[in-house]
Length: 245
Image 1: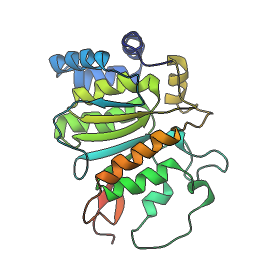
Image 2: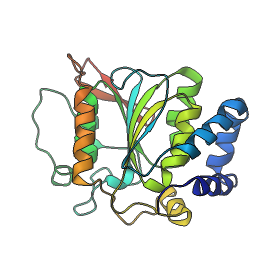
Image 3: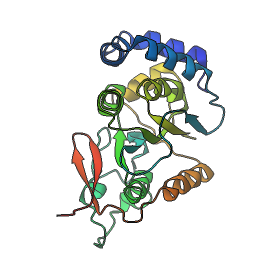
Image 4: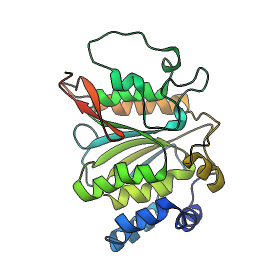
């Protein structure tokens, strides 16, 4: 199922009875009703037929301070399983990575897209976020971006069903976004999405090989001349740190 204006309205209606819905209403819609209404209209008008969906925003480009990369927890490996667990914001490899140090890569991490894109995000000087629930995304990305300008540009990998609802959050928070849709294992309707939002996600998602390459190239194009050496975790988000000590 593709994301559609009608599915966006259905998502909004169903979410009003969930914590994400009333938190979004309290933190974003109520204090910024006109901005939120415009965000809903703009998200409904987006062309989501392609794998890459661009969301307009004030940022000139992606990369460096105030940029963030967000990827779904459902990209984590299942067999062998992710050493950090699945339904969380953790990545033990990235949290312990130090540029210039050599270390064995655990078997589950060798082909993990989260590890790969995390390293490319670090080179781009961007924050990195393993996305779990809609509530956490609101509190960790959308609300700080709107209230404090924490983020102004972001690249995200998520299920196609979530594209328009996610775009509402980006537009309301003034974050320019580039969204890549999963090719397999993704949620196709609200009941499946809701189960995944609560951590019940038995399938591993994946990005098509060609689309994974475009995301690689996008992040590589934003590489910094003097990239940060490591990440440090602040709350649920990994932020670049130039001093590895």
